[in-house]
Length: 144
Ligand SMILES: CC(C)(COP(=O)(O)OP(=O)(O)OC[C@H]1O[C@@H](n2cnc3c(N)ncnc32)[C@H](O)[C@@H]1OP(=O)(O)O)[C@@H](O)C(=O)NCCC(=O)NCCS
Image 1: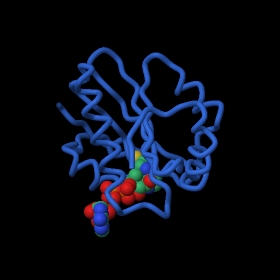
Image 2 (image 1 turned 90 degrees about the vertical axis):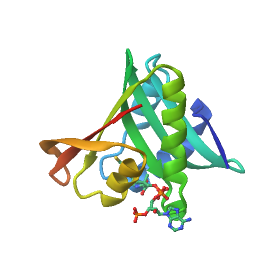
Image 3 (image 1 turned 90 degrees about the horizontal axis):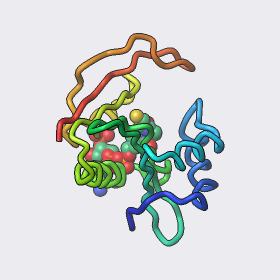
């Protein structure tokens, strides 16, 4: 299993995972636009040519915002999510990112526990932030 930067050639596999997992998935065009921006970093975990998961972050000065984290449904609960985000945080830290923010659906216990294990602290709530279904966002931050 390898962790590496996402390439444009990965987008078809990434979009398969994205549309499978999210009620309101990013479009391929949106993913492409963010992937090619200077202020973002996108990574995948790959095994024998198969993308198992991906994550990304947008940066401003020394702060980062996690944009997405996803692991294909048949490979969840193996530690891949932890490996993905932990690896991205280490690379971001090496690039001078010292504060990382994210938001997560309040009902997404698996993701909230994952981020807590990675050192994120829940420090805010954005009421009715998500639609389909309408739900609060929990804001989390990690100082690193
Ligand atoms: C959230 C998400 C990325 C987590 O990915 P993951 O690879 O399953 O994460 P991990 O395997 O590191 O941890 C998930 C669980 O598996 C458990 N686990 C990890 N390795 C394990 C192993 N070898 N055996 C058994 N359980 C294991 C973890 O303890 C954790 O348990 P918990 O839910 O009780 O806390 C994934 O569930 C996902 O893609 N969800 C849909 C998209 C999403 O919600 N993204 C986040 C938006 S903010």
